[in-house]
Length: 186
Image 1 (spheres, rainbow, N blue to C red):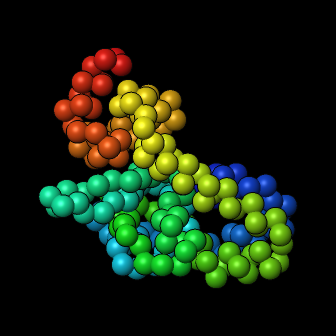
Image 2: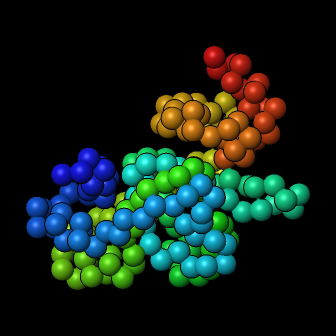
């Protein structure tokens, strides 16, 4: 079995062999080129996407035409715009491929079909909780050092995948502050 499907299943919950088969049947494989949109601002998020390889960033455009990054996702992450997905309203953010990426996509309709076949698929809600808790962490009143330390402990590969300007935006700090934090933490 494909390693990425095993990782997807592990992150989605605990499923029987039959439920795993049902889930795999609903997955849609997609390739996105660098710069392709998984979700454009103004559209409603109608799927969960599991990153096999590649990376994505979720952002909106600020007043000075800067990208305000709210989430970064890499291989073996689920990527979703939680608010748009759960409220069924247009997204305030875009999700864009930072590099060529391969994903498994699971539509809302597919999720409903799966839940109708087994209540075990309700545990996929933890994917939504994970995306919200990570975003909330950076929106809270944590210090720049605490935010950077969080990345080092939980997602150090983000630091190799994304440039400093994007990491700084994600942490809600300036690139200059990020440089000072990196010097202190080294």
